[in-house]
Image (cartoon, rainbow, N blue to C red; front, side):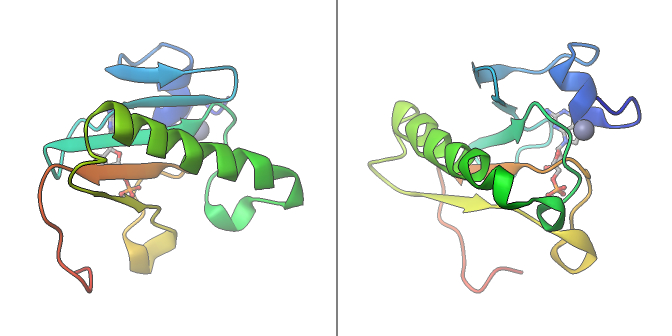
Length: 115
Ligand code: 5GP
Ligand code: ZN
């Protein structure tokens, strides 16, 4: 728990969030500033600041994040139309919250290459 971290404060319940899934390792909730009709963030309960901080021990956790994102996408009907999973890492990618998270985006078409 990092008191200065917004997502740790969501994990601890100090900041409310519209939760769509939780278990002992992960939480998923709607982004406060959605960039698509579906914009869900999946985070580990444990504080890890960037993907670069993950270790061999986090491999299963990273797999769980992606697997759960697919299950949430399916539950929200995105298996019909598609979706995008994104993790931003450091400045060039535009990371703004330094507690790792996977963006699940869907409900509209996305361009490629990304902006
Ligand atoms: P990043 O820019 O780090 O890839 O993504 C951070 C995301 O967290 C942004 O999409 C932003 O809208 C979202 N976000 C920031 N603060 C909060 C918050 O307090 N609650 C929720 N639900 N989302 C947040
Ligand atoms: Zn945190």
